[in-house]
Structure formats: structure tokens, C-alpha cells
Picture 1 (cartoon, rainbow, N blue to C red):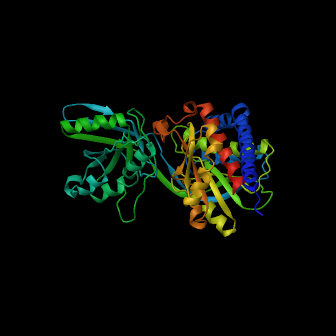
Picture 2: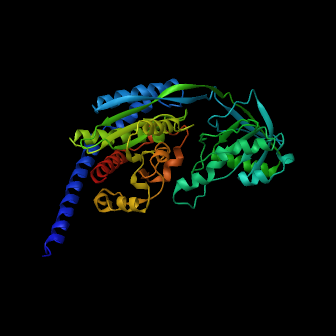
Picture 3: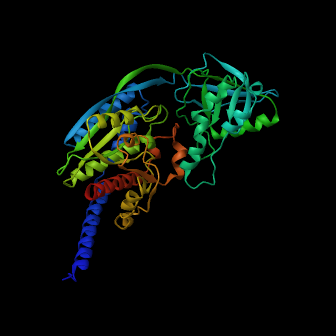
Length: 452
């Protein structure tokens, strides 16, 4: 005989479970907002250590800082994972200026791009402007030979998602020096990859190719990019710059790892951000915020006495900015040890107001995450949609293609005001928004552990 009450029993069970989950998530948010440690941890990372470019003494200080922080949280395991990382140094402060035939002169807001070579003294050459890489490729070698190429591609201000604008402009930074060198250029300067028009230059990674001449590469502020473009419309412009950058032998560094051991199985859910930053500013939003988000997310669960089913692992990755050897090594070692990784969450978009999570997975996994909407909505987590997880956790998919990955999504309108610039400092992080990000990470970690 069919049980008439069975559908009602199932519905009641799901309702009770959802209420239990929402009550626990309320406790997570209360702990983050009333007793949170994320803001003080970020202050310490930014002010006691500062910028942490891979291979620097400050990066190694950050490893020790991270290990001490995880031990203070009394996680079940805390350890270092050895990796080899590149070692690039900016050297003495860059200087650059432009002049015209009618006597105008302007000192530039300028930063060498990460991994660029130096100028070997003062580099001076006429400037030629192009709007993007396609325009550069379409120029004749005769037009480029012996000049400094200025690639002036602004963010598309119409795009609501600023990461889309960044993605469209990234190639001028990453590939500009290679394409300019193929045409015989002596150097390349780019318009900073930034949303506002201001006086901050923004650095970031670039690369060279074998068998292509290496030339110096720098970024100038959006304000000065506009000035340079205007002057070029009037006539010939000479750009002079001096950079003392250098590449050294690779060094040993470490990922910093803490764990809460699973009570039911050894399957692993990873949560993390990257410990390194560029060498300007303090790496507050990129990615000090992600580091303290991740540590705080796990600390809160431990503080609340949560008994996790799976092993929950926080990883402070080293070397996301110029090689991602932390993420690549972590994934490779996980596969070699035959670990079972079922999910990962990354925070690498700053300490701004969280709005949801980007989902990397198949349609079933996307629906699985979207079914959490009713639970998370009261905490103003609205966006659960397909997107990108993060640079550090992405290599795991090579070995675990079926795993679920999530990236903390934030309100991105101000992120590229600070990204890779001197302005990325602790004072430009809002305490409450940072704490809400940590709470969102902790809530999602809890739900994944409950439901996977």
C-alpha cells in the first residue's frame, strides 16, 4: 500500500535540514562580524610585512607569518609544501619622461612590468602609438623599427563586469613586448590596465618568447596615457626611460597549508588565496584579502565546534602572480599522493562586498550550487552562476576534471582602481566588506562539506 504521508515526511525533512543549515550559517556570520580576525590579520600582513613579490625576503617573511597564523588557529595539521619559484627584482625606481619638439616635457607615472628586462641605462626613442595588438601586427616593420611602441587600449567602460574589461586588455600587457620586438621595437609602454583615469601606474606579469629579442616593457598611468596620445596627435614625441630590472636564479619557497581532518573520510575540499603580491603597494586586495578570507573561513568553523565530514584544507599559495608554481605544484603533489579532491574555493578578487560565487563544473554541479540560493539569499549572496574559480586552484582540474570549483564573486567596480598599483594598501580595504567575504567563504565551505 502506498504511504500517503511519505511526500510530506520528505518535504518536512528537507525543511528541517534547510532551517538547521541557515541557523548554523547565521552563527558563522555572527562570529565573522562580532569576533572576526580577518581585518587584524590583513593589517598585520600589509603593515608588518608589506609587498611580497615572489622570491623576495618579504615573501619568505610571509611564509613564516602564514605558518604562525595557522598554528595559532590550532588546526589539526599545519605544514609547508616546498616549491621552486622565479626571482625577479624591480631594482632602483623607474624613471620615464616624454618631450616634444616644441619644448613640452612631462615626467611619467611609470612602472616596469613584472619580469621585464632593464633598459641598460637610459633608453630614448621616438614613440609610435597603436590601439591594440592587432593594430601592432598590422604595422610594417619599417614603421616600428627603432621606436618605442605605445599600446593605448583602454578598458571598455560599458562592461558592467570589470573583469571582462580587464580580460580584453590583458594581452597588451602579457604579449605586447613580444609582438613589438618582432617588428624591431626598442621597447614598449602600455596604458595601465585600470578602470579610472588617475595617476597610478599598474604593473603585472608579461612574458618573453624564445628566439624573440627581449625588450623593456612598462606601464604608464591612464592619465598620462591620455596626455601622451594627445601629444602624439600634435607631432613627434620622444620617450626616455630607465629601468634597472633583473631576473635571478629560481629560489625555494613554500605553500603554507592547514587542515581540519575529516571525521568521515579523507576526501579533500580546498580553500585558499595567494600569499605573494607584486612589489608595489601592500598587496591588500590582491591577494591579502583572499588569504585572510580563507584562514578566517576555516577558523570560524573550528571556533564554532563544527565536526567536518571531509578534510577541509586551507592553502596559502605562493607565486600566483608570475608563474603560478604554487598552484601547479599543489595539484601535482596531490595527484602523486593519490589524494581525492572533490571541491575547491578561491578568493582572489579583493576584499570588496561579496555577491556570490562563480561555478566551474558541469550542468549538474551548477544546479547543485544554485540549489543553495534559498539558504544563502538572506545573507545577500545572490549570484550563483557559471564562471571562473581561480588561478591557484585551476591546475587541480588537470588531475581531477570532475571536481567542483568555486570563485568568490565580489562587487568588482573598484577592484581595478587598486590592482597591481601603489594604491593597493590596507587603508583601501573596508573592514565590514572584508568580514562579509570571510563569512561567505566559510558558509560555502560548510555547505559543500554537508552536501557533497
